[in-house]
Length: 316
Image (cartoon, rainbow, N blue to C red; front, side):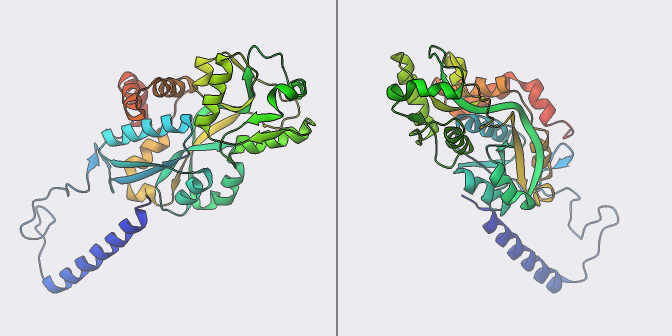
């Protein structure tokens, strides 16, 4: 994880050796035909590489992501596209705060997992000065409290009618996640005295939801869109007239400073990465149904080459 700092150390060492060799060799004349010293062949270094006109630059990339189903899908898809263009891509799952910190400090190259303005709003404010914001890669995201359609509840305030059945618990995901903080705020905003958010993980939340639905039992979970659960189950968001969860979210791409110079083609692909919620949900559902994340991403890329062509436009 976070190989970038060693990469820079290696580059600095190589530069020092080059300068020493140049000082010792001295006097080599350039060929007027090739612009190179004696023995040069005039071709570009194979290690530098090109993506049909835009230089690949440094081919080693690391993308980080929070291990939510949505971000597993998006990170594997964009990693697949970058690999097809000639990059050696490592993807690393880490927690929310470390994801932002690692990109801001240049220890990782980027992420396509920034939920704004609400979910990651505090982290964005903390690290935005040290990041390059490449803009939105998915619009129409949403967070809130989600229940099965069969529950007789319309708003968050209606949960008071289920206090005994739910034991005053909202089934959440990882502690510190934006949707968990918003759920905790909703407890205060709607006067849900004695209620709490039971934190776990996104996987554990999905398992609990599935078990409750199989038994037609009430359950309320912290939810977000896009997510495969909306394709698999009949669910609804509880209305939020107090605005505890804010408005519509979007998912943005953030990269480290210097990536455009170091890996120009990768920067351009990440800058042009943009898709729809239905695209993401297709990959997520395939993973949920047993396909590996890498294979699900590869299948989506193969079936949606027209969209992928937009992401790599200008490289030819």
